[in-house]
Length: 500
Ligand code: UN1
Image 1: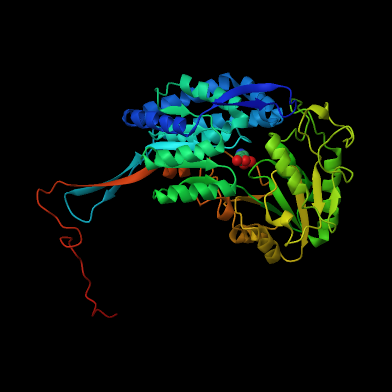
Image 2: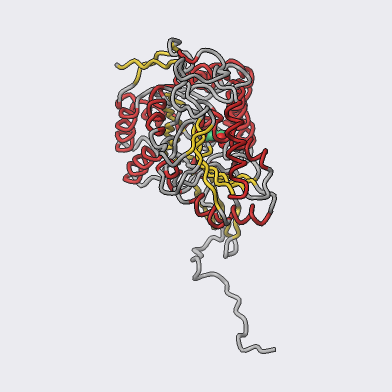
């Protein structure tokens, strides 16, 4: 049995949790337990299931600050953002509490008399949910809240490096009145999860997989579930563009780039990847953003005033260091007096909040002069690094926005409605912001991406219901005779020889 230590990335000597990681059999066993509990849960009336969701929202509210502080301690997200994350769970519960009293089907007219047609939403069954740790409680709630509300059982595999936050959310879910077996949590590493998921699919124990994480792992999950004729809900990476037109409010755009690119240390799937700025305002945008970055406070995430804290965990820091290798001689580096890499006594950052030595803190990097064939332009870089490039015509900016082949979020700063709508129509992203940053989606609009960012599935609001229910149609004939569709339908034919 492997023990995993989840450590505070701002103070690596602070062990937040020690968890036992399950093996593949442990994952399959949890799916079996969920399978056994699911039918009973589906039989509970939806408005009553909704009460459980309402209870969860109230319990989260009652534990608001404790949960936010735990998130900050475990993954290093600044406390203000951690509070926003906890609020996002409450928002999700608020929405789905009401959905328990809707979960509408339709009554549909029949083409024949004495016959009525209906549609029903039917739970999918057992949903296996695998989540990342950058939003260790909010993003999981986007899956498990609607999944449970719709009458499914959930097996949740949280990120190991966020297992204490996951355990806290799980304790609240259990307290909310979800019956035993309906909600199972499995701590496991990626290899055991994949093997367990494969075994559970072979054994017919999983009906839906939800995954938030990298495009590479998402593709593997897509292959695996595809073999079982299933469509997963995939929320993957992004190389999210922000276009700045000549007429844009430049200081607003700089503020949006600062938050979108460097909030959560650039570790959101919605984080800004490349700012694509009209050549007439390019230099001034680069200078202002560079200056804003140099002035920003970085460091201790428990402080209210920091732009960002440490990277999530060691493995993200190591991967991020590889991305820094993509900075080339044709680039100009701003934001930290030309410094990149880990913030240390030898590689210091003026105004750093706290002691950088004990944590995974990295300099912010603004890379000007990015080109379309740069790796830095083409690939997601989960960390505090943003590229900037100029454009001449809006069509070119839209082409650049789409070129990396992702399609999660996007943004345009403009005061011209024609540019805003042309961008909306032309961009391949699932989400478009106008005069707001690429990140910070609200919890009741469709969330999801296309291309390398996902398979078109959408979370949040009413749209996620299609992930966790299937439509069942019913036709009820009370005529007392066999009425054959199409054949026994009355037809009203016009006189086609009629002329005016
Ligand atoms: C993620 O990084 O996986 O829109 C989700 C946002 C947040 C969610 C990000 N509400 O930035």
